[in-house]
Length: 527
Image 1 (cartoon, rainbow, N blue to C red):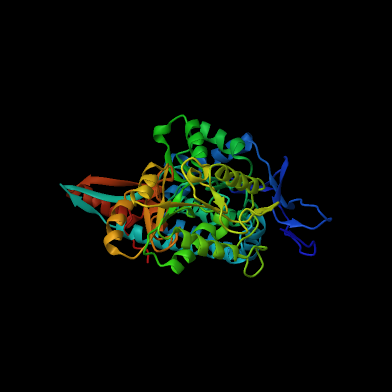
Image 2 (cartoon, rainbow, N blue to C red; image 1 turned 45 degrees about the vertical axis):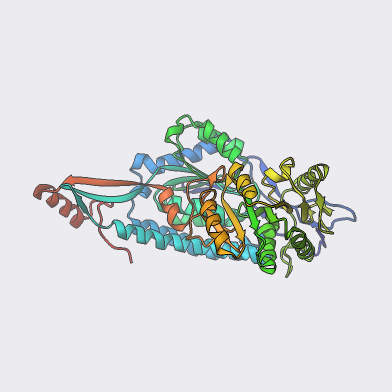
């Protein structure tokens, strides 16, 4: 979309980076950050809008950041991993309160950097703040459960969860704040030290938070780098000093980074990866409800979500009716600028994505599918209008690929085993949406689907939230579980102090409790 140059884009030039608690000036090369929203400079000109600059950093700086995180952990002796729980929580509370003051600029950058509409951009910020507060409360509950000694077989034990070490955190572009912080926040609060590199898109919105990280956390706990993954992440992994790889992205990237680590058996993986979430629409599905949920499921944020519905299996008895009504609903969706009221579809942030979507459409057409909606496939330099493709089959790329954009494959089925077999053979296993009413059919289906994916959505679209529920996947979709509660466990390990239950040891333990010489041996309750 091209807009008048009367509209002023933001411009953020960040030449700072955070290592070892110091915001240093970057003197090296800078990388321009472009928005795929075009401002009118001259008639017929379609050039991405430059909205800022960030450091283009190299291996040397990356290794300095890693060393800072390693030193801050200090083989378990560092200030952060040995700190009292209530003190780490106080640091996190300080950070989120500072973060809350940056809402306006971060929401604006979410719109300009990645084309997220105003409502979704505001929701992402607010949800992230809520996520941090929820994480703090979950950590308090977890610590309360640990504030006791257990006795079993004449052994007294004080069991708590401890940090894993140094975490390399790499977030995604589609939710550069919320999804990134679903990795970073639990990693930090559990006592780990971190090296954090923002995604290639959605990078500017991290820059207003650099000072917040500096002010809220001890030196070396949070180290923030900017640059390309192959220049930053690769050399860090090669050192073998990373204890946890926390990444939301593509499985190929995760495997490539994992392979660089010299001690793979020691590397903890926490990964949110791609998905091909299906919708299964049974003959007795409520048509109006199903179409509403499928619109949201397939096209919220232009389908650029791992939780999006990426393929629809529709029973042959209703497929024609469904396609006719679904096509009409899709064509009525409003395409506009992110900040305009009512804009559901917005410019795609990746410059190459429209041509990629067009390629999927052409491949499907060459193998027998057709564009079913009137506007489907209409091209702009920064957008491809959603295309409903039918009939889609296994020979088409669209059947297998996680398209991550506005194109919707539809497959008709006669026997329910057809979509079930497709799911079983898929490389992915995150979620499914099941639409229907007859409990005699739904019951056995749910039992099977729960063994193929990690979330079955009944008459509703696939989604991440609420954040208190587990968020994970089978096969190539995830490693580890990310949610408020589960993430605390993913970024920690159970560890404990044990002693024989006798008068001598009990006196020492009591003195430790009374003297407050150990932050680990602690039975104080956090309210």
